[in-house]
Amino acid sequence: MTALAVDVGGTKFAAAAVGADGEMLARCELPLRGASCPEDRLSEVIAEITGRVPAGRIEAVGVGSAGPLDLQAGTVSPVNIPGWRDFPLVGFLERLLPGRPVRLAGDAQCMALGEWWRGTARPRTMLGMVVSTGVGGGLVLDGTPYLGPTGNAGHIGHITVDPHGPACACGATGCTETFASGPGMVGWARDNGWTGEDAEALAAAAAGGDPLARRAFQRAADALATAILTTAALFDLDHVVIGGGVAAAGPILFDPLRQAVARDAGLGYLRRLRVEPTRLGRDAGLLGAAALVLPVPARRASCT
Image (cartoon, rainbow, N blue to C red; front, side, top):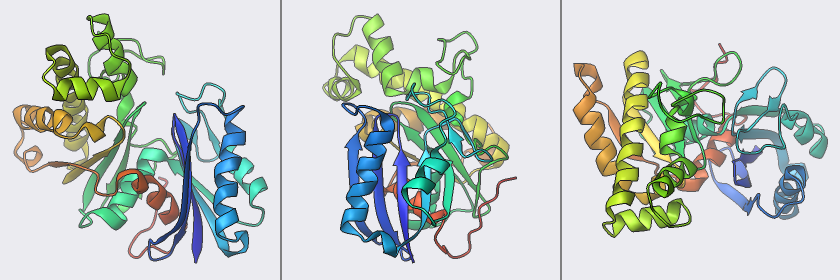
């Protein structure tokens, strides 16, 4: 069986043809910037895959999208794609590839499932996080991805970590995303006198010892630690895996994050928590999207 996996992020779209064994037969990724509209870019990415792997071989479509989303309606409203509000993503993909079942989940939920399937030793309870343009999360509980009734379970980027913090694009205040997303970190650094351009430059400055850039990463790490420990306290997590553009900074983020988790983990069962970078990198979300529709052993997705 071959699945078409689709990953809808805030700044890029990716797709891949994935076999039942997890082998990626073809992969394409394009930035959203420069597209006349998001639908055109998504069609372009998928056409690249079906041009390399005949569409007749593709039996089902799994898609992970930035949220929020509505599983029942098959719609998505990614915070960082303003043109998509209640966009009928499932219906759009069904029209592109008629006759194939389409299954939708959050992009970070797919990242978590991909890591659980192909990247880790299958911990019993796991949180997967994407820390990038936004901050998302997905849960695997007792070996089962937990999506929730609407498909938004695990959306850790919108846990409030400071009720007096910055306003968030979601409409709330002090969300994890306002502190730890790339734009959130860069915005704070610029407000405090940093003159760089983006999160990649901020990470380079922090690696070079710039005190303000390091403070931006410490601030992000503290917010992430609060959100992670809140989630771990609720779900008794074993493992946290983090990917995304900001997480690519490596020790600049993970060293202060692990220190903050160790500092603030008061309960004994929280102190066993492991926090690690993704092993699968940018492929985790695509593999997880494929796993939504492939016969992955010992896994059944829960929507309740």
